[in-house]
Length: 190
Ligand code: ADP
Ligand code: 5GP
Image 1 (cartoon, protein in one colour):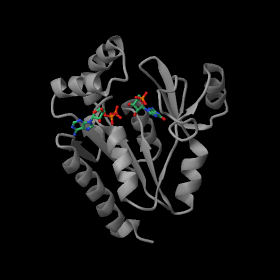
Image 2: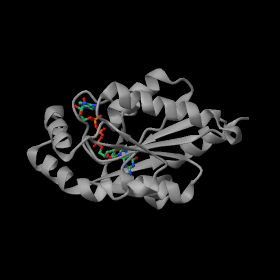
Image 3: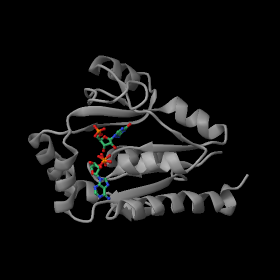
Image 4: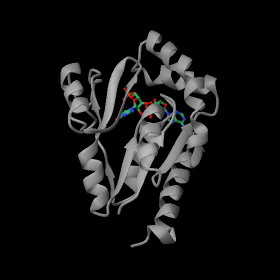
């Protein structure tokens, strides 16, 4: 069996940035592509960044139990297609999920043997500054994300690791080290 790695944490904390760096630096890790009902942002590629779909089509995936987990995040639906994750792990390859805290809790209940990594911000002020600098969310949406921040932090005790994303390169190094260490565990060796 491959190892399931789950990166989660508040919006704007740097999960996507760390995920990209991890995929570039660590070989043999398969990125799970989520389904979502939100609109694509400029530059996002359907089928690569997300499977973008209507509420109706997302509802069908839920009904047919094709999602390993799903959640409503800031008014839109997001979910992880189940088959890709299960098939890839069964083939002995590691899988990476980058999902919100509600989804990570659902996955942990089903797959407690996974490795759960919580990315936290150095401070609430820094998180807000990053969301503004990213320039991809409206002020209203940033306000909504900041309101959820404390609630999202309360999920931290359910995780195996916390990485504070202060200096980016240090945070990436920590996440790469966690992946490397987990792969060296005696029980994870084939
Ligand atoms: P998330 O995927 O968690 O919503 P992103 O990866 O999109 O967050 O990061 C949010 C913004 O913060 C982006 O503009 C990103 O470039 C920036 N960022 C990420 N990590 C750091 C860091 N350590 N220091 C400063 N800015 C960062
Ligand atoms: P964004 O719209 O900024 O790409 O993502 C918003 C939030 O949804 C982020 O916290 C991201 O991690 C989360 N997310 C992305 N894909 C999934 C998924 O498949 N399931 C869940 N539960 N959350 C997801």
